[in-house]
Amino acid sequence: MTKLEINSTLQAAILSPGFDDIRGTASCKHWVWEAMKMRFEALDNLIDDISREYEHRRNIAEAGDRENSADPTANLTEAPASLDGHTMLWRACTKPAADYCTNASQRLKFTFMTTYPGDFNGHRTYFTPQRHTANRFATYLKHIAPLAEIAVLQMAVPNDFIESLSKNYLFSDGPSSKTWKEVVWHYRCRKTLSRLRSDMKKMCAKNLWIGHMLLSERARFNAADGYATLQSSDALMVEIDREWPKAEQWSFLNGKLRPSLLSFVKGRLGFIRLEGLLRGLLSSWTTAVLSVLSPYQ
Image (cartoon, rainbow, N blue to C red):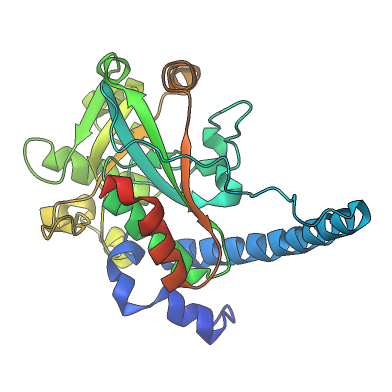
């Protein structure tokens, strides 16, 4: 980062010891790129906000009605903590990346929320069934880009729809451990499954991939013996109710699946919930988000 002339403040934020876990899920290059992108978006949005606020104040002054301005939070409603027959999924992202969701269309556009590189292929959208995991990522995003608007996206997917999908289960322990190591190593090295043995290529036809998140230093992926260096302990762990389970991720990979997912989410649930669209200091953001998300406690 020093060679790239990244300033010391941003370096300190990215390398903060308190976020060794989240930082280890991607390369340093990735987090530098994410931080700079979010900071630029925040600055760009701030300029737009100032312009809108100026126009709003001018209109109020001209109308002579300073007491009838709309409350921007008036239409917010609490999302349910659970929904019968549905599985709740969460994802941390920026508000610009989440702006695909509107009250009018409620359209879900995966292309604005892709992650690269990823454990189960790049250019994919990852969700987690663990709200605490999404919160942890959101906190780190806010830490490296304090002015950015950070969102925790909640999406409910019908269980019968999930059951209808073909799935890959890739966990760092148990029967799928060896496959998990091989898959995440290849994708983190930006290789393709075409280099894997033939029986694993069939995995690409599956609709939904469910498994553990990898936590490992980038240097380990350059080892000559490849994925054999990975261990079960290299999976990310998060604190949930004083316990430390491994972080899980879900990815809907098949492009043909996406219109079906849109139909189910829009037609059977009726909303995709954005939580914590706030600006400010990390402490303010954390307090506000926990307040907004209080139904999920």
